[in-house]
Amino acid sequence: MISALVLAGGGSSRMGRTKALLEYGGRNFLESVCEGVSAAGVTETIVVLGTSRAEVLAAWKPGEIRIAFNETPELGQIASVRAALRLVNPRAEAVMICLVDQPLIKPETFKLIADFWRSNKDSLIIPKCRRDAAQGSAAARQRDSKTVRQQDSAATSPVSNPLVFKSSDPLSFKRGHPIIIPRKYFQLCFDGPHEKGLHWVTHHQLVKVMDLVVEDAGVIRDFDTPEEYQQLKG
Image (cartoon, rainbow, N blue to C red; front, side):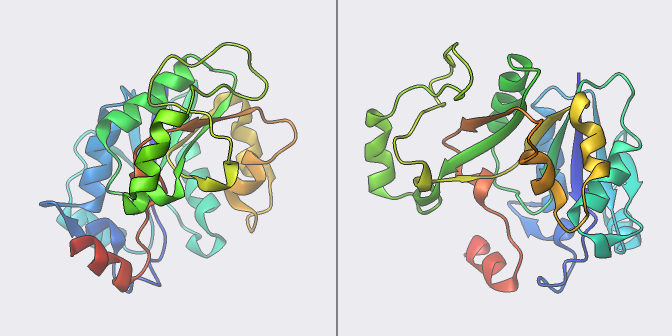
């Protein structure tokens, strides 16, 4: 059982407007992410809103989606995570943490990540993608035939999905979102210093992490500035 946490509680200071309501593909960013998450088979979705919550709720109807409020956005992303975790269903085995400024992730990628966790429930799952995949380079596509199915460095059983690979050049990959955190690591999200954010959790010595390499460059593409948003629309 997975709960999805959609983080939309930041101040959008660099964008200069509320990112959750930016339009792309006939929908706003928040709608795109929530619809994508539904493909993962999550039990509940919790959207975290911040100082722009009145504006967002005036333009978007949550329906059955639950709303959490980040009362301290100045503390960064981890404050939104903590606000959502306080509302998570007590039966949830894990949470999928999604960012509202990543509208390009395909629904099947959400499902792939969720299914990967269901086969590795003791691990924190982080998707990653080739850096040059975001540009759709020919070099990236040529490497597809040279890769093999990825295994976690500590695991012995292979991953069966053909979209999961192992690369001989780890620097060519970038980690992204959504990530999945099992319940046994929830408390770490409250224990760490807020300035370290989720990085403190994902790099904690007690946390078992499995990287899932995917072909979807949307997992490493977010949009923080007006220039990046214009490139997206262009």
